[in-house]
Image (cartoon, rainbow, N blue to C red; front, side, top):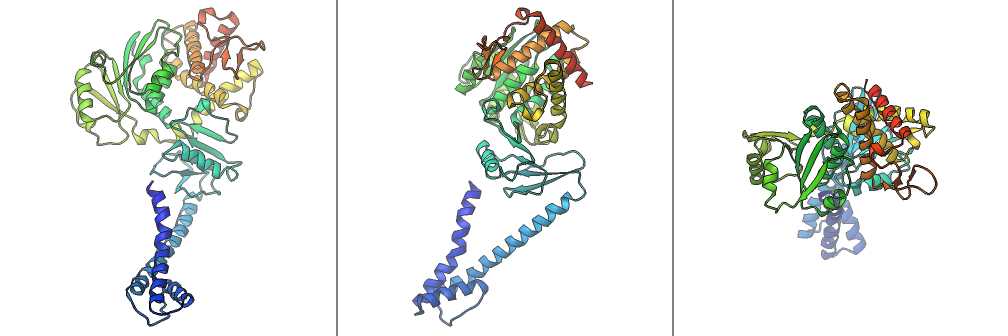
Length: 454
């Protein structure tokens, strides 16, 4: 909003001395054309007449300031161009990060990075678009779509669901909320806690809350006898609609409560893990800490120095810190995507499916990424549970991925396993109800993902 106001104000301020000066000269008896010429000359500090009045005096002081400001802007633009070019010299790769907020992303060694704000830089090899709103990111992409052809492009989307988007021909989508959620769950690591029944309480209304739920459903699978209760305290009706009838394919459950419900304090006090995914007031934070004194309490905190960091009571842990979230691993995700590409290549060889990663839909790319990410969990579980149980957990994860992407059980009329138009799949059933050939595929899948981790 501030930048829009500046864009409007600057042309007005620049023209104002011209208008005031012209009026002043006309009042002093000059013709309109001479008055206009005299007002223009003021921008170069040239007085074409001895006439004087308050309007002329105002214009002769303000017009040179406008000129000086414009010259400084040109100098700054030229300096920025030199600075950007110089910072990229000798680098094996170059990245431009476009944003309206300040970022300091940690890139791997050898990568040159520039932050040109909203000014497009065509000489850079890779482009990351991460403004403060999804709409602005997509608009920037559309404005420069032709210039981005043949480049690697990464677009940040925080509220729009990637599974509902049209395919992008040359852009990868990343969700910073999903990155935060992924880091959080791997830090909590339910699969290493040796508890089959866990009560997880999540307090929040935001898109981050949605990402924490979606990511948790795909990672928190560690036993066929597990019973994870997700207690979601939210006033966001869409979250309830989105997840209430999901069907988790095992004994895990999702329960929803409004923040005004008095029963939530009993739920919080019995929680093993409490996640606060929104910025809440200090009084509510303190009350949660007191009520959930025996739980691990994770609260969203992008920057140091928040009130929670000064609370000594209970086990309270910040998550989502900018320095851990805004990294190359979470934005370009090269290591994770390379595993997903390798996984897809194995599938393509085994089942004669599409091998070219760039030809895959966003849905199929996401499926391979989800499977590769879950491979880290399976690696931790490899010595704890049997291959058969791992295969069943992988099937549950796969089912959840499809259900989260709005697929439902159904038998396609074309004789195939799935119908992507109707979003139905015939294998969205319990592992025990699968044909043996499909169970064998799940076993093959976990072997591949385990090998990829190694």
